[in-house]
Length: 216
Image (cartoon, rainbow, N blue to C red; front, top):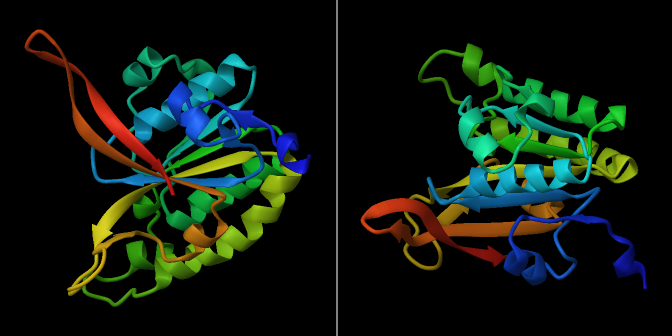
């Protein structure tokens, strides 16, 4: 059975691994994890890194948000000293780093945090008030076409963290949308919608968050 040949990496959550069907996230594919702010997206990806590192895999974290907390990552079991970390200046640079790491064949898991922070160079260098409509979507679309084949060949898992935005003027249906255009939706083999549903308390102190993850 061909479906059983896909190598997977645990998400660090048994129930989510079971929901994914294959026992985790598939290697050689693109995965999108999206949700509102502070819903647990980065926590989930750090758990994936910790699980991959325990299996001896090499991981990279493309920190476009410039917000990775090494102390928190360590608490989740991430070996920070052996985590490749990059803080690119532009969206193009971030995606080029992804491609270079993939083609090197030396990296097993790449995390991009986040699609919303992948700002095109033209937008950064442009004037405030300039129109940059569709630039980010075009950049993502070109990158996805290039990355998809290389990832499969190298058997590298690429996880994009994405945020939710509200569509303007939507009267009917779901007003929520993810950033970066439609290319990621099309190329992602797995999409996870993560929401915070409550707090985990020890006495009066909040020690964690309860989340619900939907496999889209």
